[in-house]
Image (cartoon, rainbow, N blue to C red; front, side, top):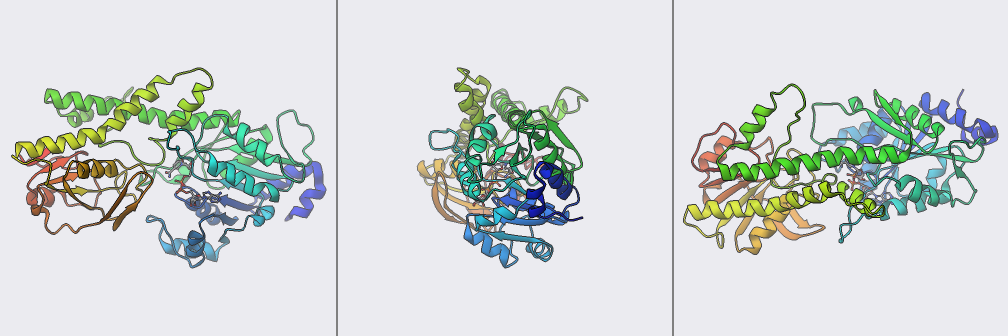
Length: 457
Ligand SMILES: NC(=O)c1ccc[n+]([C@@H]2O[C@H](COP(=O)([O-])OP(=O)(O)OC[C@H]3O[C@@H](n4cnc5c(N)ncnc54)[C@H](O)[C@@H]3O)[C@@H](O)[C@H]2O)c1
């Protein structure tokens, strides 16, 4: 039996069963809104699992590339896009196609604005764009990271303004006729981490009603081994924030202890290695040049903003933010001091930045501390160059307009200082140390190399 949308509408109270049936037997049409680092891989996973998948994207260039079978994300080869297109994957800028979707998953950005407050404009714009095309018995899942309450307080009121008068299904709502099913399910991907397959990362799901949770669980069961249902969307939203705040606070702790260890002449990396041998109660976090990426520097502030509405100060988040934000300044001081010991001023020194992405082996520059470090060094009069295999150019970004071109690594000895900011696996660190005049290492990338040229900071 293959139920189409007409059948679903005429079934009325059977909308739920019909949708669940289609999700379970993978005949459902799945729409993914926002084909970025989260949405595109998700679309490919659902395509691989046999669903007919349509990607909705406001950037027409991305849609055109996908239509030509080209990828725009480094770790997704174009062959994967071509394969997906031969299955049932397509991309569009046309929101009217939403009406033929059975499930719609929203993966749009949730950044901070200039005042470091949540910018939900992408979520709101998406909700407003899909609303005119909604029909009964559709499942809508928000995956974008956000503060607890967003699904219920922001998304649901907008989608309930649909022209057909459809209501989001809530617990206690007997009638399922003319219902939409709404859930929140956080994305937990760790880009560049190849030690765990995406399907092995348990998927947390919190529906507005038990039925919404059940439908979302059925959908995700096709691509994830374990589903973790929680009682409400707010619990699922808070779960994601707890995970990221936990990382943010622990990274801040280890960054602060690194500063103390440097002063005391103790190698923090050796300390972390030793502490990591404890078989319980300790999880290692590593210091670095500052936080980067779309999540850890941003998400905690979604909660601190929301907490203020409850007259509550999230002090751990604020303190962690303060420490982590100061790390690029620490790196610049360390470079300056290292040059000073070599009888050179920072002003006029030639500095090569190695690695600009926010973490190793990824093509993602968002909130990267390398950009702040370059900007600070330039302001102090240093002559800065960079190398990163993932970025041939640094153009205008959200915060800086650096306008730089990646330089080759064939004249390392010409620089007064080489600063390792992102420890990409492709770099040959022994050769870099051998050829450089001075190396400032923010990631312990030169672990095991003994040289008086290295300053670990
Ligand atoms: N990147 C990660 O590793 C990661 C991990 C966990 C959670 N998240 C969360 O997932 C969400 C998405 O992150 P991302 O990294 O994929 O962002 P991204 O910027 O890579 O992708 C978002 C995409 O959405 C598109 N878009 C924006 N508004 C749209 C609209 N109205 N309609 C259609 N498309 C629209 C953008 O053009 C872009 O292609 C964020 O909330 C982020 O915090 C990201």
